[in-house]
Image (cartoon, rainbow, N blue to C red; front, side, top):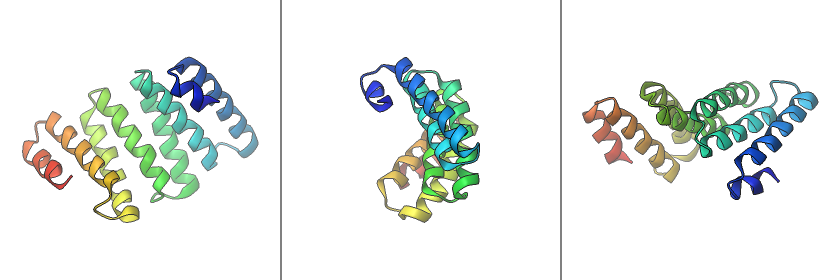
Length: 147
């Protein structure tokens, strides 16, 4: 139901459902369960799509922490939340923080998916954007070319 609301651009309704899911997951499984991490990640998605980038960063950061504890630091779901955290930081013009998140996600995705996967290329592009915004043009060029 939350995904349906999100698909229709009904962000407030989607957020309400995802927050209810989060409460239920916390109550059922405790704070450090991977399902709590997924619920936090989904809340981050809603905030990103609605333009609440600071809230998206907060939810995504929490998702990363929970997913790392529950699944291990090299799990693909950790990379997904790190990439989302990076986008949130990028939207807030926090380019150094975005770069850190994107690079960590890239390390995981290269390990899990290989160097030629499209998701690896997308992260390299995001790294290039972050470096460009930091006026690190040589590094940006390298990242864009590798993407």
